[in-house]
Amino acid sequence: MVANYTEGPPRFVPGYSSMLSMAAILLAERAAEDAKVLVLGAGGGLELRAFAQAQPRWTFDGVDPSAAMLDLAKQTLGPLASRTRLHQGYIDDAPEGPFDGATCLLTLHFVDAEERRRIASEIRRRLKPGAPFVAAHFSIPGGSDQRPLWFSRYSAFLAASGVDPDKATAARTAIDGQLNILAPEQDEVILREAGFSDPTLFYTGFTFRGWVAYA
Image 1 (cartoon, one colour):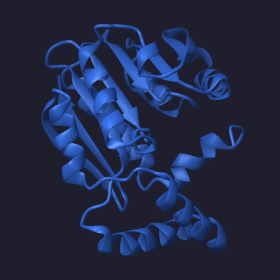
Image 2 (cartoon, rainbow, N blue to C red; image 1 turned 180 degrees about the horizontal axis):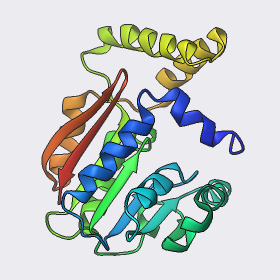
Image 3 (cartoon, one colour; image 1 turned 180 degrees about the vertical axis):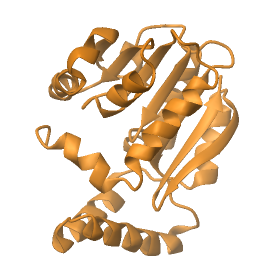
């Protein structure tokens, strides 16, 4: 899985590369040219590389629980790794900051609502006042009756991206059974309860949503 990770998100997440570009732009709206940015769930290094290429003077602290994924991040970053400190662990293992911005991409759907709120609160505590936070993950509108339709669309997207149809169906079943997927309005409430202001939707890709909010 680690060996093939860098091929995954661009195929499995609609508009993935554009989402990273938009995230960098949203961070740069308020972050200085020499900003320090916290990246939670940094394993693999794809977002770190995109942000480092977009802003040549930014430095980063990347956090991920998987040592193998952090090793992959080093490879993905190449010479850009000199501007990044990598930390194995979770949000409680992240430096205290204060940071000029933070991201948590394709990560929060792995935890339940209570832990999601705690993680968001810990991220906010590490940010300077007014600093931007960008989050993106699975988030499906409507009630439970809408989920089959959205998962059907996502499965069709995977097949259109070259995934074997049987594997696309299996992925749909695994995602529905294993991830903690909330409705967009629930995600926004969690951001507000964690102390963030003005959560604004900036990205929608079938079953994925992304927000920017401010400490």
